[in-house]
Image 1 (spheres, rainbow over the protein chains, first blue to last red):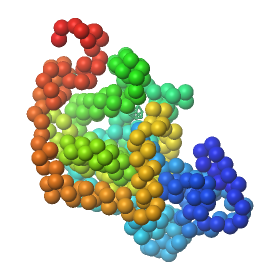
Image 2: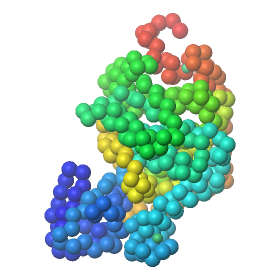
Image 3: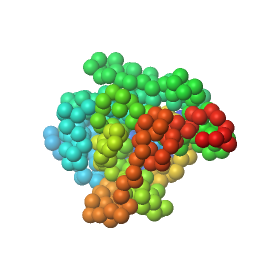
Image 4: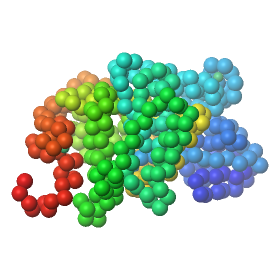
Length: 62
Length: 311
Ligand code: SF4
Ligand SMILES: [Zn+2]
Ligand SMILES: [Zn+2]
């Protein structure tokens, strides 16, 4: 599956949950939202090999 | 995961509340929860005139959206800081707000254009004042506070609302605790009462996690500015937020617990001695209340005379 966050992209092998995928690419699950085909996903959603997931950062502030 | 209310596929799960909801029920929950916070802390009522500080980001636009949906008299204020950062940060922010307004013809926006009104952008004032040392954030904060108070006063708004969320509040709380800034702790609250010509200040989103607000904005289709102010990069706020999110990942609910226990301790009088209000004096130039007699910090900022001249 393909994971996209800002200008970075990762290709992950196999099936895993959204939470596992976020941790795998080194992000903290609490700081992003996962979106697939324009739909928000809960962290237990199992991702399939041909899924493309966009991670939206929720952290802002100066 | 299934929605607790209707059993449909859940779109969003809140581990700290043990609550998963579908899109529709989440949007409903979020609005109802905002109303509950407004009432709980007696922030304002429907006959109050509320000015919402909007930056074009997810928090302020979502706040404005919710207040309008709840039927409050809520107008917006955008302060153009003249920050570019190589991608037109301030211009892009205003564009997002204008797109928001296009769908909501009933909403009214005030725009304060700092460069036009005062002749300098925030980075320019900061460069002049700090001589290139440090970030413009303290100058920026000072200008934003002054202009919010000014517009509220000039247009008769008795309440000033900002989009600060729980993550913002706990980041400030952690910083204040690490430095034992008891004066700041005494004043960190969901509501700061009005006094001598200063509107009441409220934070209706103070109990929402930042990701809850982001989920609301996303599901409501609010197009907000995703890019950060260029000066926010590497800020201590972001560093503290990161630390707290690691804690939250291990122990869901930590942030909310930290904040609510603080509010309880504060209410029980833990910072009572520090809460004594300093006397305010009207600034002889702009007449906005200020803690030190003489021209306020904002008016001193625009004084083009050299610092050595007689005052
Ligand atoms: S990051 Fe600093 S300069 Fe940018 S808007 Fe916030 S306070 Fe102003
Ligand atoms: Zn539902
Ligand atoms: Zn003044």
